[in-house]
Image (cartoon, rainbow, N blue to C red):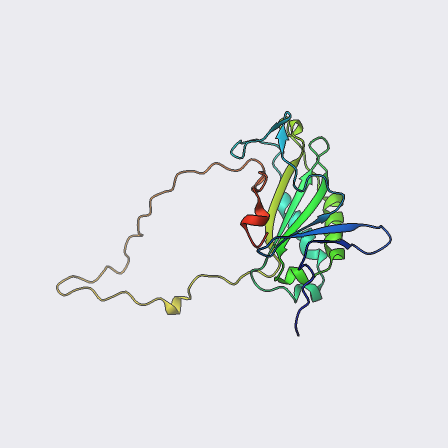
Length: 225
């Protein structure tokens, strides 16, 4: 059965119900959709610290470390019905952005991004409104002293509701090793393990393992955003 895509043009869309809530869908020429509550103030706002623009490469520990991703991803996953998930293909990404108040640590805004030809584009605004409300109600953060100097704090991630299968090639398709050349003894029964250089230590992200930078023109740069 053909799917109905709901986000072909930029427009305001009612979230339904008696709340009078409207979402704005901004659609790029490449088919990327940015969907957000029309009362949002920071969807496209410049991020600042002490009143000046934050540099893209400027490292700031704005939140106390916490394992927030597990709860956030569960909230998103459980907000979709089985029927909605059945319309999403393997590997299709949903981008979620949370805007966090630097004084209280509460989520004050949410916005979403996806391709307007993905399964997410067949899902109506009421579902995204439900996700926004749940994230605002359940997610809590603790801003640091640095974080409290900012106009807002951001956390974002991409989520696959239907994950892609493993890309590892099955072992049955890996060709066998060639036989040793003439006059060369066969390898021992218990060869020593191969040597792999130890990579340099990568410092742990103190912010919780996800980017806390403002994405640069994501809508134009990535058709899936």
